[in-house]
Every structure is written in structure tokens, then in C-alpha cells.
Image 1 (cartoon, rainbow, N blue to C red):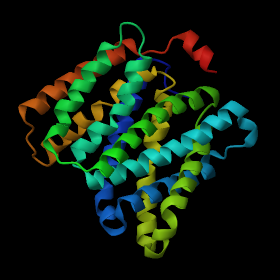
Image 2: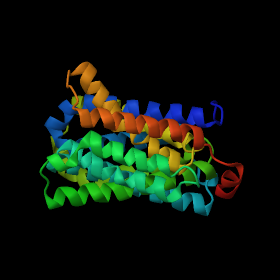
Image 3: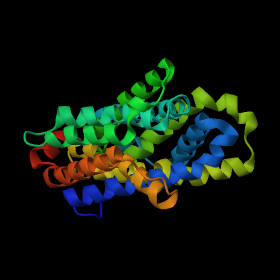
Length: 289
């Protein structure tokens, strides 16, 4: 059972905590990606996450009705797709371009699903993401663009399915169903080609990375989506490029240009608006159960 209050502020805190965990996990994974490639890192993360959640949460078939079971299986498939496709896109495109394209997923969800009076925030966040990542400055190939757009579709689907599963299954049992499915999908796609290159240090590093991404952030996101609308969550997801830019300034001394500074202002304003207007209404919660 959730221990945090069911409020938009708690949902915002959980969503931001999840983003910080993702950023730390990505920073730690840089060295590992040089050894087994980005697809190998994605596979290790998902496979270990599935094992960890199965062991510690121990979901039972009786925990799931048919709708929850189908939603959980679908969530596992789109989670694998989102993770693998973005890692591939990031190796073919400038990271800013890949990130901007992938953010089209949650932003589309936010715009389409926003309640009356809240649709300004996704539009404002979309402008901020474009200013932050400036995709028009980088070269791109068609395969990379296709992977980034496919990842955007998976991310949008992930938001919708995570909220549905979180509403229908208490605690983290829904995640304990979807993550093993994601691990199996990743194993089928990339596992056989990489198994011969693994060493025990790499396997153990993958275990630690799986805790940072995706076990901790995905758990926090599922809890956040019980407290926020999909519109608010999709808008808050746009804060991630701003967090990355700030970390680059403070840690790597990368000074942003004026367009990036303006982008930070836009997404912060959108995040504040999402926090104030993003609480889930009781009738929405009842309809989702």
C-alpha cells in the first residue's frame, strides 16, 4: 500500500525523483556501454530488473484479473521497445535530437488527454523541449529517426498502460508482471548475441544499474501515475532535458546558450502548471479501477 499522500504534490515529487534516478543511471552506464554496446546495457537492465521484481514482490496469478493481466503484458512489451529503441536511436542521432523526438510521445499523451484548462502546459513544455534540445542543429539518418519515433510511441503507450495497471493492481505487483515480460523480450532480441561477451564483473554491474534504471524510477512512476493525470505526468516528463542541462552546467561546466535558458524557463513553468492542475479527479480514479 502507498505510504505517500494521494496528492498532486506527492505525484510531482515521485516523478522528479524518478527522473533523477534515470539521469544517475545513464551517467553510470556510459562505461558499460563501451564494453557491450547500448543494446547490451538495455538488455542487462531489463533482465535484472525482471528478476529482482519477481524475487522481491512475488506476484501471483490470483493478483490479476484478465484486464490487468493483458495490460501488464502489454506494458512489458512497450517497456522493452521504449528502452531498446531509444538506445539504438541515441547511437545514430545526436542525443538532443533523439531526446526531442522521443518526447513527442508523452507530450502527445499530455495534449490529447489534458482536461479543459490544462492544455496550455503541454504546449508550453513542447516549446521548451525544442529550445533545450535544438534538434534542427544536428544531422540525422532515417533509421535513427524511425527508432526515436517508435520509442516515442512506446513511451506514450507506457504512460497510459502504467496508469491502467497501477489503478487495477495494488502495490508494485503490476510492475513485477511487466518487467519480467520486458526482460524476456529484450533477451529474445539481444540476449543470444551478447551472452558470449559477458563476464561476472559486467553481470554484477548490470545488477546495480538495474536498480537505478529501471527498478527505482519505474516504481516511482507507477506510484506517481496514481496521483497525477496522464497530461500532468507527460508534461513533467519534459523536465528531464532541463535536469540534464543543469547537471551539465554544474558538473561538466557546459554553459547553455540563450535558447536553452529560455527552454528551461518554459518547462519549469509547465511543470508548475501541471502540479497545480494535475490531480486526478475521484471519478477518473473510479472509472480506472
